[in-house]
Length: 271
Ligand code: SF4
Image 1 (cartoon, rainbow, N blue to C red):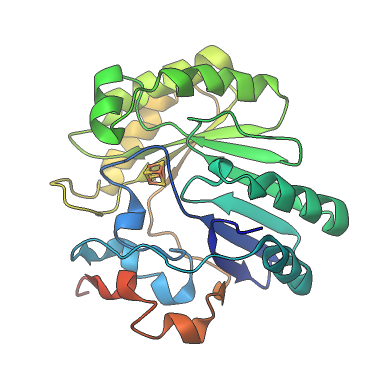
Image 2: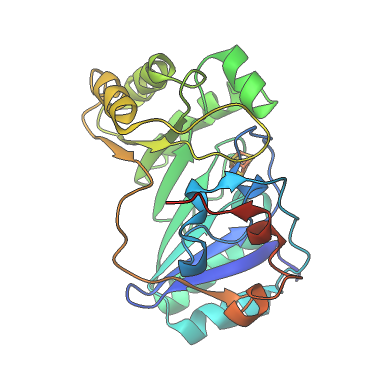
């Protein structure tokens, strides 16, 4: 069975595997895949979230078979599997991978989803839902789609009993602290103890926005804390204490220009 898995990244020290699936049912204007297709956490890509975009990255061309994905996870003796971007819940192989890893390796499975499709959660241990915006018009403008289904699915995911959190990307002057407040209020209407993470936007794609300052992130955190008890921020400048390598494609393959147009599409910001 062909999957939509195009990248497996692995952190050896924590035995975490990051599975990246292609295809999405939203079209976010700030989607990071426009800039870097392969895992941002890879040691080789760590500087790229701060880099200035130079065009749109090329889509992946190679995808793994289901057996290859499972064999790779077994070979790595993974303890954690993260199912992530683009939207893994669209791939019928996602629950099969989650089941195999759960049953045979005893992994903790974490799903990152945009919530547009109610995911199969049978073998998922934690869920993070990316809420892009609460305001209808803003969500439509940013993603090209209505958020009606997402706002309906969010409480359904909560009621499933799988531990969940939510995330929103802070974009100054666009998805700003006032919108973060609306999202936080919505989350609190489901449960004020749901963990909420505010992610600093990094420049991707062809749009006019800049990264937020540290103070702007803190201001949004303060706004969200009016409604929620567990609010955190990811500013993108935090140090990382473990290495991440690409298993598929291999590091050697990523080093070739043929497989690394996404990286080549960007250049580091001078420090
Ligand atoms: S939901 Fe995620 S993967 Fe899909 S377009 Fe938006 S940012 Fe990109």
